[in-house]
Image (cartoon, rainbow, N blue to C red; front, side):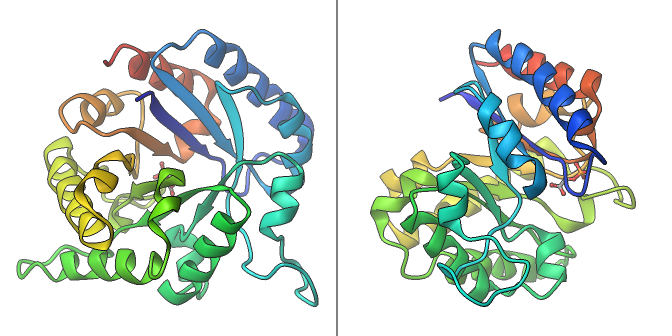
Amino acid sequence: MKKLIIGNWKMNPDSSRVASTLFQSYKTKGSRLRRAKVIICAPFVYLETLAKKQTTQCAVGAQSVFFEESGAHTGRVSPRMLRNLKVNYVIVGHSEQREGGVTNEIVNKKVKAAFDERLKVVLCIGEHERDDEGEYLSYIKEQLKVGLGKIPKKFYVHLIVAYEPIWAIGEHARGASTPEDFLEQALYIRKVLAQLTDKETAMKVPVLYGGSVNEQNAEGFLREGRADGLLVGRASLDADSFKEILSLADTIK
Ligand code: PGA
């Protein structure tokens, strides 16, 4: 399975021109990759332009989606709108969205609506804090159980899980987690996914690491952590860093 390196641009960059230039450089890089694939999750306003430039090696995704099909939902974007733009990936349940009131129940509706339009879902999960009693594991389990509640097994081929411990995300993060820790979390995530479906289905779901990934720590997560890919925030806006991450990912079998 190719390593999935997903760039989450968040509310950046400021103009379509800069977005296109950055995307173009990742597209060129992507065309040379054999063992990795790039997906750039850009702000909605750039999706149409970028989707026209995308290739199978450098695809475009959205950072969120609403769960209704159409109607009086000011400022929302539907899964079908994305589908019609040929945007095939969407991040659901990013912690910055959850902070804004997106609950596990809402995540579930979004996942369902996205799958109904045959989009591929990057489901973000991760705890706020670590505790010694293992409460954080129940938190992750709940995010998966509710977020994927009543999702038919047949859709799991379109599911990607991104484990992003919230304490490791963003400028004010305590720093990235460790490959050893990720390895353990990914095992746990697969165990829960197997409870929701079956072992074989769970094993096929790519589990990615996210949170302060950069060119220094990326290889560790992919190699020792055996991550199926990475969800990269800040470093995906820095062309040199991101291309270095892609080169590293491409060396891993
Ligand atoms: P970061 O963001 O890489 O800047 O920590 C990751 C994310 O929020 O997806």
